[in-house]
Length: 549
Image 1 (cartoon, rainbow, N blue to C red):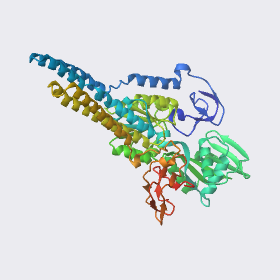
Image 2 (image 1 turned 60 degrees about the vertical axis):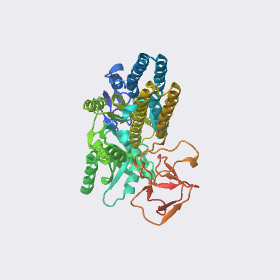
Image 3 (image 1 turned 120 degrees about the vertical axis):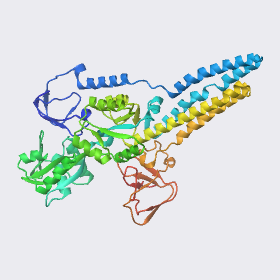
Image 4 (image 1 turned 180 degrees about the vertical axis):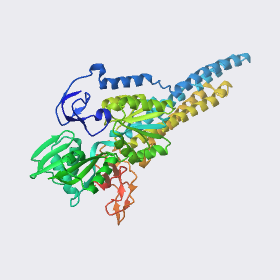
């Protein structure tokens, strides 16, 4: 508990909310969260096993202990086949002996045992799982065990964390609201200059946006942070105030009517708004939000097309979560959820008969990842989340969730096909062997053929490819660009103009920083657009030629 001082504290570890929370005397703070701007004197009210982090660890352990072990399908079937074969072999020997041909009965019994050798049954699951997990790794989905891949096929509900999963997990400028006579660039440049040097996420977002637009960002001549309000700086000899609308109102800055309505509308949409003013005059405001990831809406659409129920659960405030959910196309929202609340949501869905996959990346998601039937963590998240999950996505792209579940369904279908073939083979071959039609040698050959068939069917998984609009952005981990697989170019309806031709061997890359998607033109490509601007990567950004290709 805070006993002296005031500051902004980053509690995203617990809540997922990217905006620091203002703390002052008598407010509770949690060990492991980050103090941003001020000095706090705090008194420990819980230590050791009584801390919040220790409570999260207990939630993870409890969730893992409550989960029943998954019984492999092949194990259940083998438990039926092996006793049945032994009974048939013994019955064959007895029947032939009663007919006066004990030696023939012995050969027939041996043939039954040979033809029913459970090689194909034993290969049915591990072969498919081996190929499926290998293909998943190539698509950026790491699976920790075959039982996870088997369990995930039955998932019918996907619970998504917001921050870092559906969103970028960092603040970004979404709109610049200007007063009469002001321009957006002028408002942003002055706000960024006033905040230049601050470590606050809102300040960093404005400075980054100004630099992205190549606007001059001056160094402030004076800087003073007001906890819970904003900052007061001196830029080019002018005293500049940047902060939340209520704080600027207390400094007698009055927002023009049109600007006030725009600010209220942005706040109603769950955005963080900071207002800029100098000399008692408001120049404008900057709206910021934790921007949704480019593939979030496409991922939700793809999940719904597959018949899955999608829920978003977040520790962030209700307006921010609702805004992200609305943009992603999700109807079911649970906001301001503590780690224990996320576990309760997962368990409630499971009690309804749902098979639940939880997708998250933070410390606060670890208990829910462990409690879900299938936990899916983002590799860029915290170590405890990765350790609690059964699947790990190597790319922070929500569409990788679709790929993971689609691969699981395909793998399980292949397992069922393998087991079906193994059982059909046994049902046909065992009676023939018992009747003496097949010799032990012929049974050995047919048994080998059945195993080869299972392996061949499993290897088809290596060709699994997600639909282009559902595929995560994965850059092949090799330097030989001539081996890059071609990707489908997604047309943008806005593209018009003269045709441009890309010769075979031209390498295109996504202009979105951090995407890493590349396309090698393996056949001559005529694109209706002078600079290919009407074709986009799966993330929505333009594909542009790599210099020198």
